[in-house]
Length: 260
Image 1 (tube, rainbow, N blue to C red):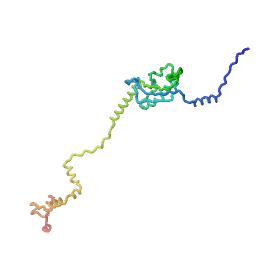
Image 2 (image 1 turned 180 degrees about the vertical axis):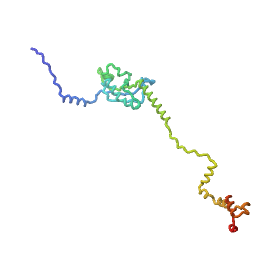
Image 3 (image 1 turned 90 degrees about the vertical axis):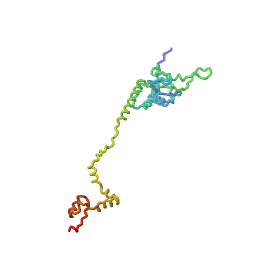
């Protein structure tokens, strides 16, 4: 008589078995089917160059190899942003970039955020090609390189331009308003007067008189010592001659013995 078999209960894996399984997955070799990526940074809001839908800036372009060909859209977006966001920040560190507003496009300018099924491998089917074997309909995987573009929206790029213009105006204003130290002021020289000449002559150093040449000294002495007495001094007494000579500033030729 046929009997219905009983329900077979699968044994529950132990904690050690679960740990061993995760350790084995951690040491898995990289995927054999890989692709390479070329990621560039563009911005909108400027005239386009050639067939491109955006304008490159800062020569920001990076390449990546050994990317899993089965990578989904979220994985590709995360990889691209992690690779180029530091480069965009270095382009202008003072500006506050918002990577959450960046848009990722492929070479056909498809917005990856609008893909209907983002959890499917995005580039894998583009790597499958018919086999070169005769009468073979199988598909063979061939690695390829794909392009991704990180696009800065026009609104954020305009904010960046306004920020740079404001910084340039601030730097120009600071350079104009720099105050250079004035040279130390010198007291004004008072105008020359007759009294100043007399004062300077009175304060003239004695060395100036000593620096006279021998001819000048001899001329001065001869004119002073050998000056003949004036007619007024003739017939005066000795004391009167001394007084007159002192008033005139010359020498008195007085015979001391005659006055006795």
